[in-house]
Image (cartoon, rainbow, N blue to C red; front, top):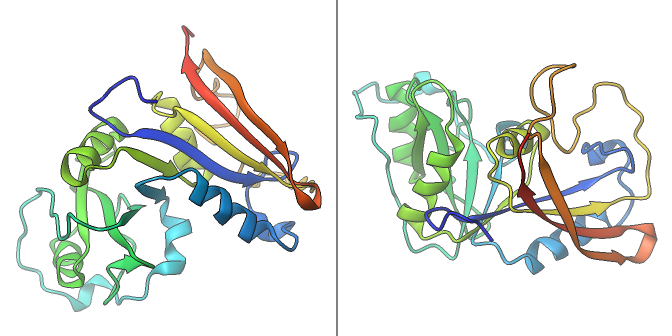
Length: 237
């Protein structure tokens, strides 16, 4: 549970190979998708968050040049508050184009932006019926984003589901409370392939020195998969 009641509890939920790589299409066998979604449901999040690359597959809009250039104030825009769930897209530069889509399944789309995005992009999001929050002027302040998600939508439990850069940034900000890991019976072995937590450059210190993890659950599943669940706390570096 989050130590700060002004933000949601954050659980990073991912599937990895034995060597911690997360591009499941490189090694994913039959059943990994259904197992992942099963655990996702059991974690009972109010919302889930992914980075831009992961969210690209859900978008279907047109470039910003096709939209209204009327100036828009850089304030949060809440299009829907009473959704059954929320899909949070981290899109700092405004690269995702949603078109007529404002939900993924029944989960209302909320986009996290920087204030440097164009007026055309904000008008396009408004026309789509998508909500958006600002995470900062030129970079994302994840603690601010979490507080906004709770205040605006009442989100108490957030599942963060990659990629590795998003996971690493959340860990570096000491905002990860739990790690839910579906460990696949596969070895990736690819140099430079995204990992569970990526942050900084090669040779940099770990993203969150002093991180402490305590095993809550370990369960062997069919097909050689292992389900792991850890609680996370933060000591001194």
